[in-house]
Length: 341
Image (cartoon, rainbow, N blue to C red; front, side, top):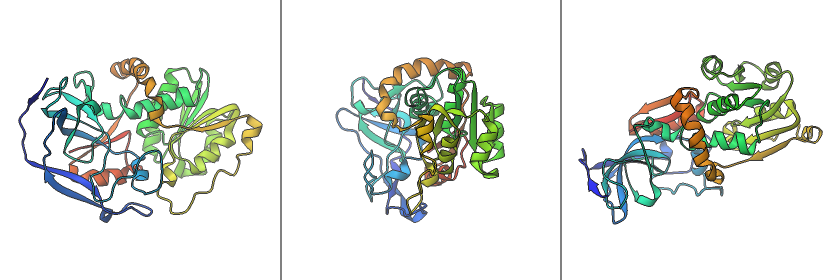
């Protein structure tokens, strides 16, 4: 089904990468550029973005280093998750007025092939949820905990970056699946209270209040079976030190080292994996797309019933997208960081 909906402007604003950041990204590495609203071709749709996602992995794409995804191109608009309303459709199966999830964020308007868009229902959940709790973020938590870390009922689970979008879901899913104890780390006392009082973690600590290894031992005196790593660095070393026999570590991210200009030292206690027969495994959510239907079936009702809680940090204005991204790297967000253009 095709069609056209009313537009309010002929101008599109989009963020371009001008130079590859060294260390912390700086405003002069980017530019907010005005362009005409693009026109869809046959088989394409024009989308007015309602929410944009900013995520830690985007820092890696700003570098030229070879990775699991191509770097952003200099002088061109960046990409990221987005959800929005179809303004014009020249494709079968998607009509003007539909809402879709796609990957051309960092801009107000996007034209894309309809085959690369997924229709979403704004009546089933808030649109922003499809970028977080019911989107890639949620699937990352689900796949990393249940498949990569081989979670089983009765496990003691430690999550770093636990007040973030992924970490908060990992802890709650572990509790819903029968973890005997869930511990989280976060970067403020307010976030620590949130983990315990709202998300149902059994214990949490502020990693800025003392050595992570000491605080983890106090929170998990019997050790841990699973560590879900969003941080790396001293958190990873502490988790290895507390790992029980047959413990598993799923490495999702290492935000503590993303802006380092020198290689970060590795954990100094890796030999402990021999004693514990432990394992460390990294993962990417794209390798686990086959879990999407199962994820939606199981997690959707938890979200709808309120058993799985989530928070979002919403930043208004396309002009503030870069600041939202930098705030994410600083840990300013609670839950999923999204931008409302």
